[in-house]
Image 1 (cartoon, rainbow, N blue to C red):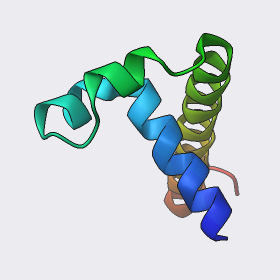
Image 2: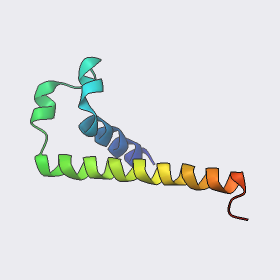
Image 3: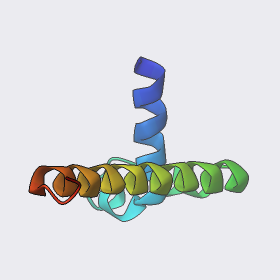
Amino acid sequence: MGKFLLVGAISGIVTFPGIYLKHGGVNTEDLRNFPPSLKQKLATLQWIVWGLFTMLAILIAIAESGLLY
């Protein structure tokens, strides 16, 4: 479980670096030296997870409203 959390944290830093740069959570040089192919894969993974959570929330809202019955 810890490895999943680590990958999630790194993908969040790669996908939304502005927040972490603003608060000093990441170094600009480290972010620049990150491998571009891995950066693209982690960013894609991050957006897929956000999309899945969004779809889950929508489906729960539809089920709770009773539109499925």
